[in-house]
Length: 194
Image (cartoon, rainbow, N blue to C red; front, side):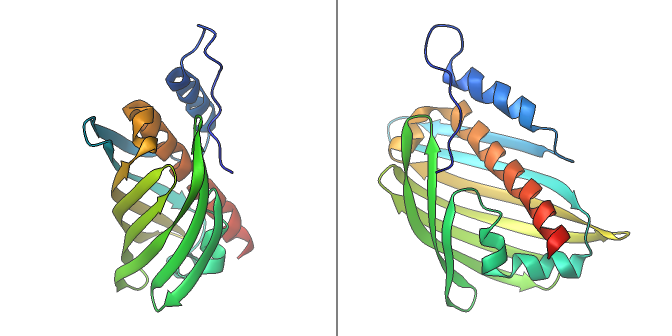
């Protein structure tokens, strides 16, 4: 289970402040998420999270592309990923265990790769649900060569609904940023051994 540390409500720190402090400590990675915004629709229990950023990887574009197209490899870099299985070409079934504050659960869903332009660009569609709610999203990933390195740029737009959407805008946005940063850091480590 992937958990966000939260300080007990003893009046000293709110859960949002605890996550913010923890994120500040985790931002020692090479590059950080550029932006992460969140719009919360209270009546419908849906939060929209938009994220984009760039990360430089110490590997050539072709190697990064090969890694990102390998479900066994990519499953290693996604926090809480229990399985990622191909069900048909460019379509995968995924199981993730995630938790935000006291809301924890297992999500089952699908990931689809679209508009692939090897080795520089692809688009993802994500659709998952579980006891805590649902996640739906779309993301584009671009890879650009820079000397012997690769600059990975991403732009994502997701919707989170159900109980998980009730934790608040800042918490969801902070956790999304943390998951992406951890995934990118783990991607860099795994690429070194790929």
